[in-house]
Length: 408
Image 1 (cartoon, helix red, strand yellow):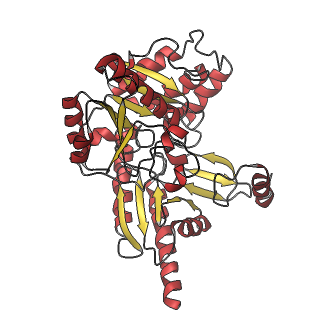
Image 2: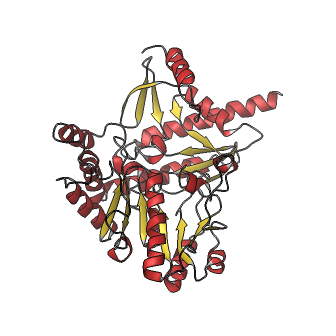
């Protein structure tokens, strides 16, 4: 379909309107670039919210996917398959853990982590039946299921979707003392994003996670790190927790684990925690399927060399330095780690959405969140020149907006 207006009209007519896409219709993609139905190319600085850390159509991942499609794609966990074991071993080794529990989406990984923590609380810690609580953070984003939105403080995320289940206690993000004060005999876990993505790439104080690790270890409470967006190379390390030397009890992984080809997620931990599950306690028809396992194994192999992490760190320093150079020139703040940045636009100039639309006109795809904040998360395979050009386009957009405001 070569007419973008027709493609957009069909989506608007037949899809539920739970998204507000930018007005571009992608037809093909390679590396850090996508091409629309009219042949115009755009630099993808969103990377599907970190699902495309390794770029569109990474040749090693595509080859594995094609080879596996010709062999077997789905067996269910009713039988074994020859790809799941090697994937499990590789991912556990990468994370320095003993076991994994494969699922499909990031939200499923979070839901699974919650179930594991509660089972551990009742079966190991001996919390009274029905009393287990999990501490979560203000500003959190862990997915869109009803359990998860029930402990979100984002009005749009939870309004009109209740009633919600109990068992969650919210404390301010970045406040370790608040975490400590909230822990009692019924606390089974602290669930935290090492860097909050949807909230605007919020980086906590460097002492926060190490102190929370000390508190949870000393209180017999699990530390669960939601690394669905921040993990697997995005922040210049394998996990964002690595940046501050913290090892959680459970990693929640997703997005990039599927290489941008299929949804793959996993909970990764040691046997003393994941071992609380018994056959029949939890499952997924597609979780651990051979196609997903083959692709995820190839993703882990890309990360095992450390090259992707080093590249993200190097390019991230360049990107963040360039973006911080815009502070005071239409930008009020920049936060980030590795190739992940939140840029606060001066709200007197424009909303985040307006900036994203103007960036799209200049052939750069970025996405807004929370008013005037835009996010940069380019694929790790982007070039230095790509990133320089992207910041140049943002500079030009801010100049245009500033001139418009001056003319009023």
